[in-house]
Length: 425
Image (cartoon, rainbow, N blue to C red; front, side, top):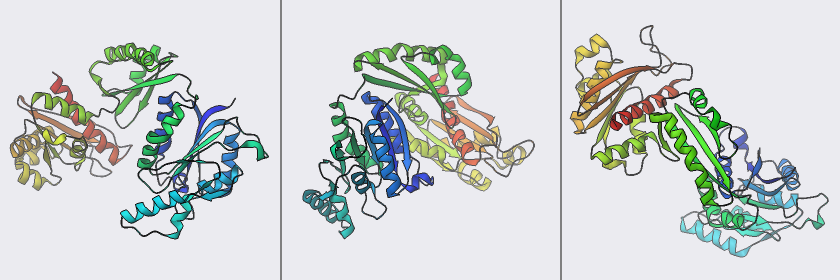
């Protein structure tokens, strides 16, 4: 049975693992939002013959082929020429496209190389898919099957995009999405909601929601990440309003069952939720970090508008800096060690005093791979939350099997979650 849409990502760097294939994920989400089903994703390197073969295979299987990558000016950018060869059409230069490329390069102070002219060559009969931010245009092309020696799906159309995510997304929103909405390919409307959880294992959450995971519409599917668990609710209906109406009761049931471990939805992050809680209170936050090396502060600073709540922090990796910058008493370090509740609370208190913040988070731990002991193994992290009502610190053992960056990521998330729960009381 043929599918409606397929995604083909082009680039040897994807096959080698040098670049994460985020474009396929993003395109899949966009197709789902439009109600267009897609049943296959593929990756091919910068090889003309293999690319031709994959385009021909897809043309007999799907209605729409969406490609990303290979639209640049260099010799390994083969997409447009290979697609034209696969579907039996010569290339022709579009003077207006070439003029636009020259103007954009000149405006950026970049030389106009002869190789850039290749980007103005498009298959005969193909419509331009404009690139509002870059020099590589794409195409929307429904080739004539009459001259082909192989069969294609009726109305088969190929849409091409550059591999640069920002350019691809701008082209999608400006031209491709409206074209697809009007194409008649949608099978209803799909709406989804991603609920986000911290402090619960994926298996535990799945057991709590077992009956919901078996539903057909809306569907509920679990995903696990670095300390965070997600449940995606997806509903299909004939209209957006009906799809949203299907989501509501399931979301409410999940939130009721999960309680405080559900911290947000969709694009919410722990940092964003905590900052909003503090903003609503008119309070501020500072951080003191050791083993996370600034990861906690980076998570907070990544949220737009964080500066009205997040005052800053101190990275005190060495004990001397814990004493000098955060006024951690030497006797606490000597008696308890840097990785301990008393020192974590002293660090948090020092951050509050130094910045004048209402609240402070402090992290001190052993991220590994070395430095652990029987009493204090790699993966042991002490996290302190200090506020107007005092300081509380507690150690957590993340284990060592997943490595240093895993421990650091979980430490920052756990610190934020502890503050979130405290602010909620």
